[in-house]
Length: 138
Image (cartoon, rainbow, N blue to C red; front, side, top):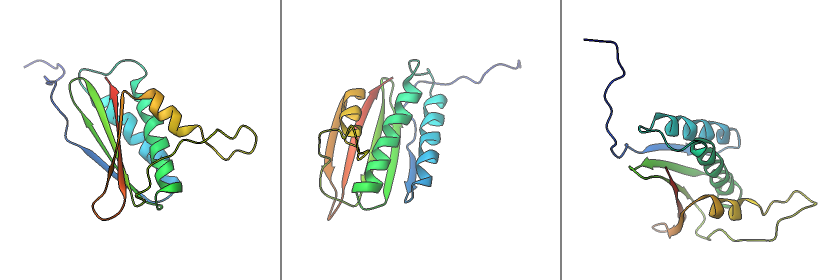
């Protein structure tokens, strides 16, 4: 037997689930997203890992700020996409607002998420909360 890389197949990957409830957890969430993208075979297009980390970071941050202070992130890959789901405790859907160019109050994230992803859906949770699902092409 030779020392070669193990044979891997292009199959859907088991979900990666991360729970977060603090701003410190956002960096960990980004790291998990990058590691997830880096583990995929075949590898996603260049830049996909950083785009994934940016989208995940924004969705998790929004969940902390506007979604009840807690979130659950799920990452799943298929042959042609990486699917992200972020669930939080607030049933109100994300809303677009004019970006605050002077006061630092935000307004940039949701349009950015929509621009960087190929599909966005928002599903109400059972009882309360919601799940924001996005799709990034591999």
